[in-house]
Image 1 (cartoon, one colour):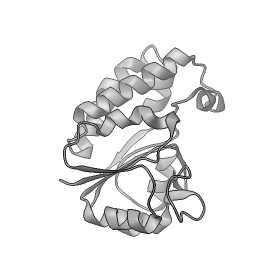
Image 2: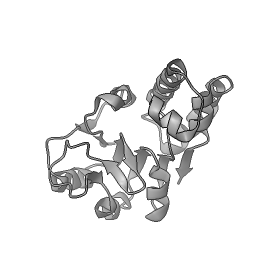
Image 3: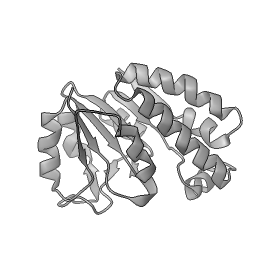
Length: 182
């Protein structure tokens, strides 16, 4: 399976790099190309992993991709391609709203705390160590099963990530906002 990773270069989400490190047959896009070139790459791949910062309207380009009009590298202009029997992973804040709005399928997140300001915004009392533990464990679990199908990945995350949540409010919050739609 050919996997495309779209992960705009951004120091605040660089911890996600290790999620896709184990993938053998991959193309990683971090920026430096146009949105039209991203479309071409999506067409060429069976599987698309999209991760970083985002909103209900899509994945932010973080200024890394050219011609993004509105600041999104993944938005409604990519939906037609993402519906074409692609195995998709949408990992950005409020990706659930994007997935539901466009009736997409895959593994996706809702609001997801990965930084202190997000914890404050969400009203989750957490310190830096809670956030770091959540990020580290989430990435480790996801990386350990990333070459599996989305259903298997989801089951692994739901079972293994939840165990950390018994003592970590960030994990508890994030765990409740992981979704899978076959």
